[in-house]
Image (cartoon, rainbow over all chains, first blue to last red; front, side, top):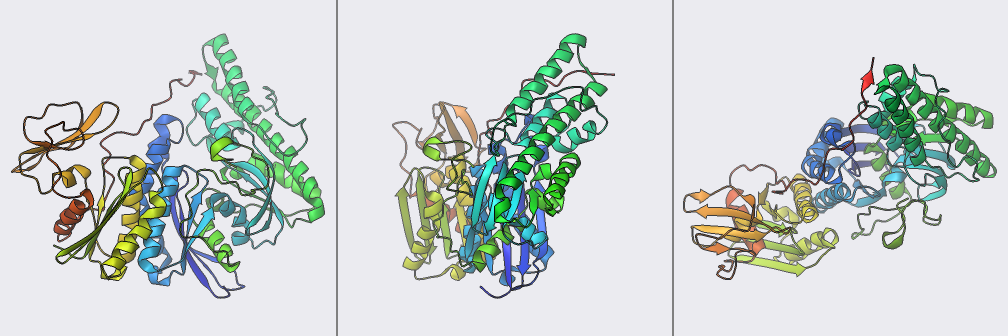
Length: 363
Length: 201
């Protein structure tokens, strides 16, 4: 489609209810006309993590309001929309279904095309929306739910080089905050504590660093942190503020070193394919210590480091609208009866990292 | 009565739709354990086609809000909200218990199986409906209907989705809140058991 496209994007795969309008002239720079994100942190706070049923309930009752707000903010009515793009997975299926069904109703009512978008593709294509970078590029997607290296070769062509075999780093940050009595979300609170801590007082494991390839593991790190905390509690009945800062600093350094080492390995592995940049996405990419180390790695390889602004790194619907535009430009059709998928790896050829059996790989 | 109205329900192991036109009702009921998310919109378009009208001819929508299967209820409610937004017409939520009671004499108690050894109960008197609630087995003191109402249960006056359409058509004549799932049962979630450590000065 070689004309200006204006898409409504919808994202409900975790705990953010999001809608956005993105306009892209043929061959010109795309523009985000609106990007509304309604978070649910307060709803899940008491449970120490996202509760799928609570998230699904909130999406079902809030999404139409968020869509209306995104349209109003963009100053375009539904008559100005060319197509709707919706996250069809992977993610918490109750939320994904709420988004998909609202999108089905909306597109049926308006006679508009509906584009099913993979949530991970939305993250992976964001650097093209924000910085206009060319294929191929290496993407480190590092968030509360995901952690993987992808060589992005096209809007529908992804090669996964490796990823976490258990927890995602964002999840590890959240669990660390919980174990140390810090507020959620854990990323910013652990980072703030770590800033005045001694990273060398506690030496936490760097799992899989000795193993070839780009796979990572973060669940052992959380267990090691729990042991260190419990040792302090056994010794003096609690932990001091300084203990907590040092634990956070040690934890953050371990995550940083694993990500930096594996990023270097991934860049070396794809060097012959001449990537144009290393790009990051996901909430963990907002961590300044991690970001600084990744920039150093990039400099060593002589590659630009591309980090979209935080509001486009974390879950949002502008990335879904943009991924929809990329798919429409390629002429990729969405079958009307596409399923909502809790599991949907971007690279269907790579062996499963997480999950297997009847339902197939998660990522 | 706001007609034509299109009603649908996926709150149990079925996909059901009814189009209520002046003096005519067209309906479909397909039993299915899963696949409602893919089947619902094509079924609605079939019903519209059989009625000889298009989306733009509708004046209102009605949707079954449960109680029932959480995911199933959300499938229909989300679709109804999307359609209402796209068409600029009202969507009315109708509970399964109200729909089962529709067209039967009062007083009436609706007793629906809620699984886990419990029932959804709502009393309808000539003065109006009482509050719906979740209960352990109850013995009805007046005529009863519903899947857990026992051997003397009254059969429903009409198919569930037709009742949703008829109630919706009456209500849509005045302003209504957006349809919302009617769960009657909380989300299964427990606060974490392990407390945070004591922070020493």
